[in-house]
Amino acid sequence: MQRRLFRSINEPIREGLSWYELWKGPDSGLIWCWERGRQYQTETTAEWVWRRGKHVRLESPAERAARAANGELVLDGWRGGVKEKLKVPVKAGTLSYLATWLGMRNEDLDIDLDEARIVVCSRTGQAVAFSAASSSEEDPEEVPDGE
Image (cartoon, rainbow, N blue to C red):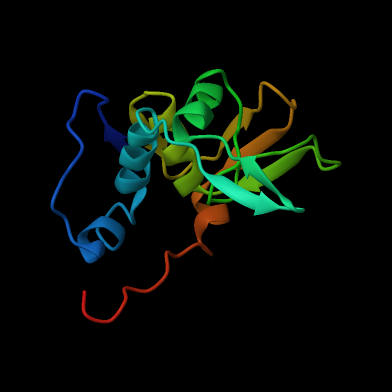
């Protein structure tokens, strides 16, 4: 029996959920990752950091989402983004990255949990395989005390 996680782009982003509900539900946080990717599209504030003696502007979430919409596997907090083409033909990526990326692209959350999905980065040409097997090691940090 095929296991599939689906949520329409027309569904509203959920609000008022606890950390436990977001990360430890039956979807293991994938819906929240997808919703967070959708939110990136409207976050236009870029960050500035101090590097090598000068201020450097970092890309805003909306700028990363626009690149994702063009097929780039942009760097994000989850394993799956690519900076350059690697020597390995296929890199392993997490389902959390795939869910966030689908949200940034304004696509439905549609993930087959039993099959790997291979995506090729439009900028680097690097192939990345997203599967439950490569996601088994990921776990968001534990809930802080008092929440």
